[in-house]
Amino acid sequence: MSDLARTVRHIWLDGEIVAGDTARLHVLSHGLHYAQSVFEGIRVYHGEPFRLREHNQRLIDSARLIGFDLPFGADTLDRATLDLLRCEGVRTGYIRPVAWLGSETLSMLPTGATPHVAIAAWDWPDIFGPQARREGITLAVSEWLRPGPASTPVQAKCAGNYALAVLSRHSSERKGADDALLLDAQGHVAESTGANLFMVRGGVLVTPPPDYVLNGITRQAVFGIAQALGLPVEERTVPLQELWAANEVFLCGTAYEIQPVRAIDAHTFAVGEVSRAVSDRYRAMVGA
Image 1: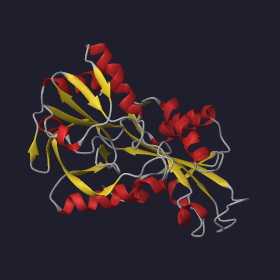
Image 2: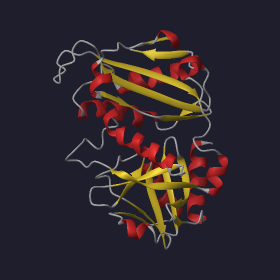
Image 3: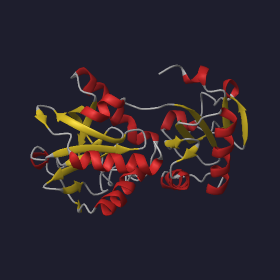
């Protein structure tokens, strides 16, 4: 990926569109030091953001979950996103809203710190590429465990929740895998570094409940796709040993879309009919 600071020409910042190279935050911003920041990732297809309202509402909800309120409502953020897309000329790409607390204090109690919101958008066709979508990717089980609701606000898409994802991605790269699979504190299947996981067993879709995982917006879309395809879905705990017996495995997320998995560590899976059917229906739904 090229340097986004050089390629993104415009950014919506605190209520107005500014030149990308003038959008700055202070190095003493509370959000930079103590992870008091939240973000979203939104796909745009042919100029239309996918489930824009759900993403912007989750941004607002995530901020509240970690202790601050955004100065803009979902209606304003929706309009700002569409204005930015027109200004930047992005037709097929990725949108990144982010909110953080400012530099008024570095106390652990950030009373009086100003919340800031920015939105950026850029052209971005695919995270792994069309070959990976056809043939599947590889995962390595991470040595890091996904924190549970007693340790972190799991349903907040906040910066702090992604530190272990970055560490796990580095580890999987060293092992020669495309991504990592994180387990929960009980050793059950959780999710990848940036996507929810579904397995297929005997024609049934099975996915972990949103106890240790983000209840992803694409995950929710897959439930609707499964219903349309007549596929039963079970939302339940998935022991790692059961995952090894799966017929198919796929990941789903905004960046990943529907991404089949061909191997996890030494265990291999078919890129089969169910994964392809879900992927085809998803791509038809978003107009990809």
